[in-house]
Length: 252
Image (cartoon, rainbow, N blue to C red):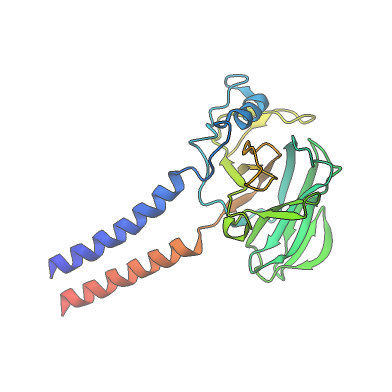
């Protein structure tokens, strides 16, 4: 009976281990080894060591980073850090309903540049509010959404959910603040990059022609939180059910 219980517990531990390992592993492979994006993060870092971010773009990628929710503050602010894309003038950035990716709302349009800011809120009835104005769009998923980068010049849209991307590429790398680095995004004053703020770096070209430097669109978003992937939650649920079943079997 103890063996049965031990095996079930081991299986649950394995699932937990896999989920934790997924959170530690990098999600994108850079064409330049991460040099360009590291330069962006170093460039906005003013302390403790000016010009040197403590975040490593290769090893410190966040996972999961596909679906998100606004935290208890009720509102989120996005600030554009940089755009180094040939299509910067027409690219746009926004959020989409996780239950219907075609249902989306734009946050930044092409002409807006580095330093631009926008606010996002989702009401209890699913209404999406941008810059304190009701967009008229409702998300059936409520406070669960993904981010997208729309490339009008090529007619392609890339999603934070890799499975939705037609080329199968993860087009976004995300990084969480560590409550120690001090960053400055002109024209704003410097401040600590907190753990409730996430930098999202995007690649805007199809995998077949991309340079994979992930500096085409870089934005910092605050008061959001990544949510666990459904697959991991399902595995954890099965593991817990197995543990309960194992205990009952042991008692019998």
